Length: 88
Image 1 (cartoon, one colour):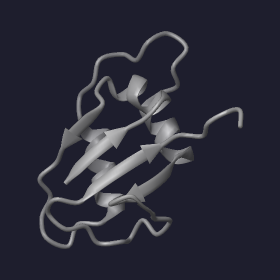
Image 2: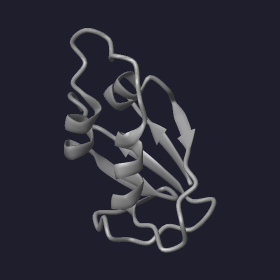
Image 3: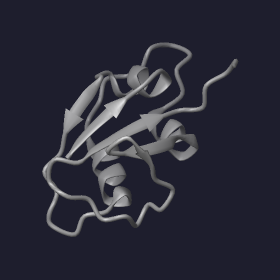
């Protein structure tokens, strides 16, 4: 499974995208736990911690909004992390 980060999530994660190899039956919640388990460098000054950003973010699963974090993932799935955006 791949995770793509946007805006503040990208800054906090320190990467644009990363892959995870989770067991069959893994859920979006499991993937987010794996994201938080990765050792990361300190985010740039003024950037909220990744955990805080993830708690406020919206998610796309294969480009479709997913609100149910118990949704089961399949190999090759892509989850986009979309933090709140200001403006219009």
